[in-house]
Image (cartoon, one colour):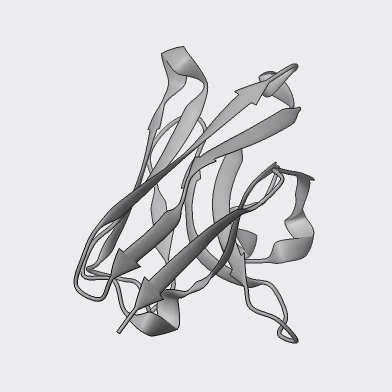
Length: 124
């Protein structure tokens, strides 16, 4: 599966930004899509995930209530709507696809396909 992320940019604190991730190739090989983020010198961290088919969304505590992950199966695209952004949300955001089970939806290693990353900068 190939993933292409779009969106990102610069926004002021309290603002909103949307990311999208288009999947191509054999999407039947994945059952979950996620968003992760990384800052310089830090490990990549989980942000949000959704099942590719069926229900179920997952969020990190730091973004719960502010970010919303959604998918459009017909377009093979996953979205991340980010509201009430904070400077600490500044990072490179990556979309990922894989076959995680429920207990591993937040685990980086369960995702085998990764997009190229897109920068999100939140100014104070």
